[in-house]
Amino acid sequence: MSNPTISTAVIIGAGIFGVSTAVQLLRRGVSVTLLNDGPVANGASGRSLSWLNSARMRSNDYHLLRMAGLDRYRTLAHQVGPVDWLTFDGGLTWDGDNDRNEIAAAYAHEVSLAYDALHLKADEIAAVTPGVDAATVTPQGAIFNPGEGWVDLPSLIDHLLIEFRERGGRLVTDEGKAKVAIENGRAVAATTEKGGRYDADAVLLATGPSVPAMAADAGQRIDDGTPVALLIVTKPLAHPLKAVLNTPRVAVRPAPGGAFCVDADWAADEVETNADGSYTVKQSTLDGLLAEASKVMEGNPKLEAARYGAGRKPIPGDGEPVLGALPAIAGYYVAFSHSGATLGLIVGELMAYEMATGARHPLLATFRPERFAAN
Image (tube, rainbow, N blue to C red):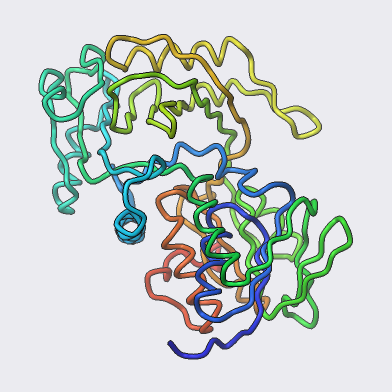
């Protein structure tokens, strides 16, 4: 491997993008300081459904990036062997019984891309994947994608941090908000609320939904479409469901220890954002979300919440990832995207490549932050 063009880097944000990039930079011989405002994975990575997929319809460039992301997870799965935090047991999805149902079109699109897919009638599902109440599947049927899976991001982050520490990375947590220090048109350090200053040749902003506002502080525009999200983790339950379910009213996936993760857009819409930035979640919302999850699971089990998290889910204004250098400020990089789980490993690899070499990877050509400056 060629020598890196930088010797030191600071990464702000210890979610999956930040930690993944940090490990990749260390592998390239770059000294890394990883900063977080609180504990590791205290943001969006800690409350993500973490469905690993490239299902449905999106731009071809985004599909290729997601497929590269899935490839890296399969490599990791081979390296670590059987674990309870990363599996590829498939994904099953169906739409509502109305004029917005896109199952047939989505299936045709996936087939055109050679994305592994089966279009199933309700009574065919049990033979392919267990644990689903087929009575809730709409007449248009469901799509089963055998190559999809899920990851528990906090567990993955803990796994990556073992290598991070072994390679000499420096982790600094509970520092409060951080800022990128810019001098003479170049990012030269990160400073924190607690008075710390961490100098570096390059800085990566990987603070999830806070990226657009922090970039704006430096006069750089990144359009923001971030909504509030709500994720429930249930108490452990003996149940045969293995696939990730994405249905009209709820998404459900297995989780480590026999738990299940549950979310839905309608439930997130009911979360109240308080003036101090905290969130209020009504008990009726939690109860309703668990009831919807029970409906799609075989036997309609009683689900109980072990914990839940509400907060902002990073989504760029145009829905596409924002990855790479800010051209107006040398040494200043950003990583901001939905699908943080699917992209977690590949984004870390490609961001480290660009930071360490100074080159621009062609797979990120359409995802660069300068596209917003042209609008």
